[in-house]
Length: 141
Image (cartoon, rainbow, N blue to C red; front, side):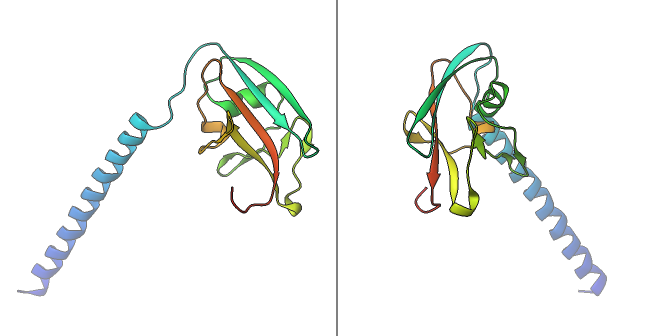
């Protein structure tokens, strides 16, 4: 086989691999859009309890048309809008700012169970209850 034929075969393999990769990526995006977090449109009431470092807490009742928790928290002034490269980063809630030098962070839970999405991509529905708890230490979150 000549060098020209070998080069053509190698180029063909790269093109086929790129096409297959594009198909796989498109399929994964379709699955994510279909199976990913879904939000509810329209008016809803959501309760958010902010638990401070000293153990005190404050409940916020959010009456909102927002579809995701982060936007509702910002709109009602529960948290400060602190966007990072990865979306909303909650540094301050109900006026209390986490001290990152002490490994403090705001843990988001829904009815006591850890939420596996960021606040800005957590879909909300009428009647749900969330908690933002100032937590110390990054181990075991």
